[in-house]
Length: 366
Image (cartoon, rainbow, N blue to C red; front, side, top):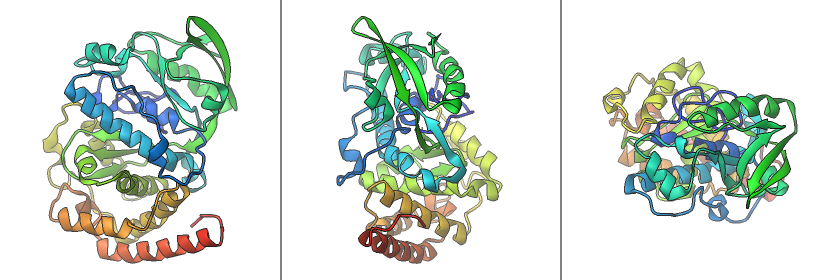
């Protein structure tokens, strides 16, 4: 949704560096990173309730359907966390677009033909999601629009279209508040001016592994398939995402001198067939000290509240995770974050603090 990657998967059209477009776990990275740049309206429902799916539910092979659904869920749940927390993500905020686009080469070669049939993508970049409330939505971008040009520079076609498009859009996003686009719709070229929106620039990845874990390397957050299976609701998934966003905002991986190690783990797990032996044990990751973990809990709860997610069940979720995936499971979440008892006191205190601020209508800032 947000940050543009410099590793091994396709990236969004919002920044200059993109990854290769051949890894299934990251085929829809653009969907989150571009759409997360929109200004999301505050709402009384859970943020996940009103979000549209990235792609229509057309027939597709079971493995492809499963991974697409998991990634769409990640992006949908992460979007309000990224759009509503610019004041809390410090130096990690960026001007980004409010839509996402891809072509058939956004899939790994094993799935290109199936993806083309299932989702109607070809050589040309096509808008596949527009975030509600975004500048892109207000400007009239629609799903299915084909990207023709940006500031009169033609969008590329073919296998490297996403990477090349990032090279076009990167300088524009940095230096302007509006991007002039031309899109093709119903056989006509339509000029549009797209207002940019500021958002937290953290990329969100799906990890193709069954261990129950999540990783943040300072720029990206990866949620494993095992963690997606473990959480019982989008609200619980938001707890995990917000915590990793908070670790990134607080530069904890860098302070632990673990950024490169965690980046390597993320690069591995976003592959369609990752090396699972590489995540045996602690995989070289040092456990976070309790003060780091407590600081991440405090910040993440504010992020959740600002994104209109409920925070009342945070303590119960982390207790359940500690019971079912204890620190003895070395490739699990609690092994990296072992100070559960210490964290619970911080969570209880922060939840009470936030509720007091909400009741008195004070700004939700730590």
